Length: 249
Figure 1 (cartoon, rainbow, N blue to C red):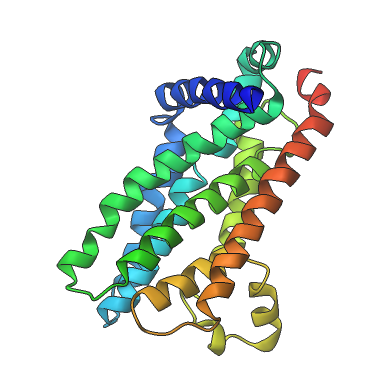
Figure 2 (figure 1 turned 90 degrees about the horizontal axis):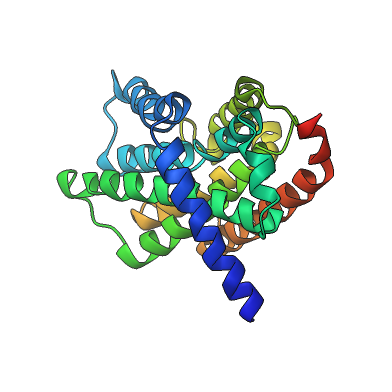
């Protein structure tokens, strides 16, 4: 227990370092702030959508893009600047370092998502605040852990290579997860694929939050996000351990 507590406090030092260095990096600002804004604008223009639909789309894109913007940037950037090698040679485990990176992604997404969620006040929506808050926390943890998995491969010190692959994954998930086309209206083949997207369950949870009604039971949305969180983080740590030596070749 003492060792776990010690590693947690060490991970906070990683968080502080990531906040100071990476929050204002160009790729983070573009993918975490500007891109979801323009994507939502394209989603909104020319459509007469109800407030509940606007809120669901806005929050889903904001949470997804902000919490996955920081993670894929950190490891390749630090490997290129040779600070990653120095970091893992310090008395912290690779799990602690990655947990710190995950927290940095989480806090970045949380700050922006919380500000965007105030849009519900302007839309005069009736929300289930309790479900929304816990769903938001769980979704941010899930997508932050996904960013750790996305940063694990390819084992390169070129940020553009990792960002290109992570962008491919994010856009693929975005268009099959019920934001633009409700899950029940998707073709059966795409609907089956959407079930393996964590974003699908957060979008469905938001529909419960706005009392529109979801495709899945609410408990299943929470359970799926929790399972994806564990799977992504454990998988990301395992792959990072496996390719660690290749990053320094």
